[in-house]
Figure (cartoon, rainbow, N blue to C red):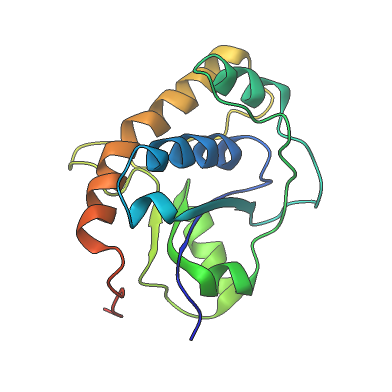
Length: 165
């Protein structure tokens, strides 16, 4: 049986949103106690080219909050990532549908990044690609808002097994 010790964060090309969310989540988990502190965090894209750096504005947006994306290298989501993931977080409903279509099943551990927030919150995170730095900062801030809800969910559910609904 594969150990499910990975949090996977997914966007389209793995150069804007998911790399920012990856470093934000990794940073937040470092402040947690075990077993959460030992969770791995990775990001991927549903249609990513391999080996691309994070976008310049993604690097800038997280650098302004003390985090580093300068060594990011894009990758596509894979079956092995899915199998190792305790939780998978996409940015939009389109990401959820694409992952479920690619892997041919409904995944009970697949959420949108903002889905665990209180009702009334917008759950999708729009793609800032090609926009100015302030759009990337707004994107980063919407991810930061989601982190406490994700941590609360992880505290309650990890390392228990996600059951099919």
